[in-house]
Image (cartoon, rainbow, N blue to C red; front, side, top):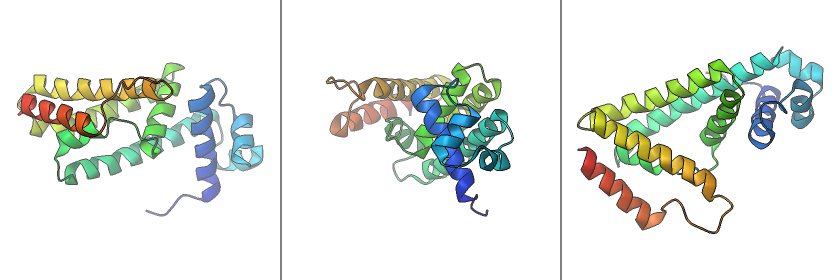
Length: 180
């Protein structure tokens, strides 16, 4: 697959950053063009509307999810352990795309809500063959959701809401025992 043009990626990066930092209402075409360092005409060359920008972000999320699923499938530790471990945010491209898409969904963007459900469904589909039943799958998904949510609260506070290192490994081991 050919690499998208650099200016197009800069525009998407800017749109994503504005969504994360300031929310959906602030992510206007003008603000996105300014943050990307392109003219509004340059932005419109790649994305004719805010809806096309959102579609570009959702496409990015889909591509990053594909890569994550490949890593999950190939992980030596197995898909369940990989999924739980990577539910602790690392501010990587997938985390940023998920957060930005969440901001769109919070603003009422139906396609963003659908995309988030599809991503979660794809992760569940990859994990399902590695757990004993649907209840075990729910346990993995909800523990991971909790890690992800609490990690967002843990960013600026002194308390440690999310286990790290040996504590995270102990949690993963517990989830693996409970779901086999």
